Length: 224
Image (tube, rainbow, N blue to C red):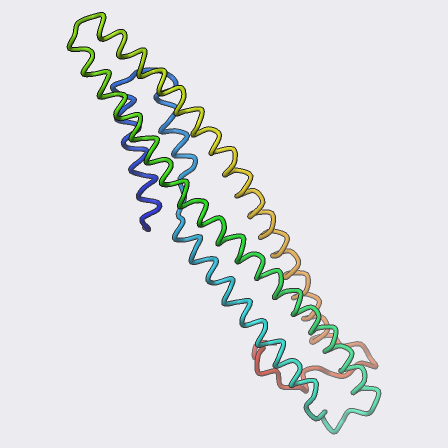
């Protein structure tokens, strides 16, 4: 559990305690809204690092593909086989480049999401602190009698309404950020799955006049 998630949890707890001192819909809506915002910035950062590492590995695979293309062909191949293989490898190298770009973009998206989440965690703790101070102020005002209790509660409820508005706006903005990130990841995953199926078909079911790719050792793809 990273520090960012703990900040969200603390904000929920603090604002929830404040809501017990300042009854009202707005007061209780604040911890609920913060709970909807809660996530793990650290996990996002780790995922971003994994994507960045994958992009580097794809770049290395692109280099290995070039080496494979430039290596000598099996003796069973004729000129047509060699030409067909070169064209296939060239096309696949383009796919690898696109895959690297998609993965790199996903890494940047997750890195941005992690940063945004961390900033949001600080905001939520601040919002919870404001609510807690307003609740304590209302409790202090209550010692002045019924009039103090009423004025203190009204003031605290006004603070709660403003805090809820601010937190709700952040929730909307974060929803857009996470929605875009999710869209990027889903599209990237779909594209990679399609390319994987296409490559497997090329390897396992080569066309009659195409070279049998299983005759070539690909060090970067031992499972193919």
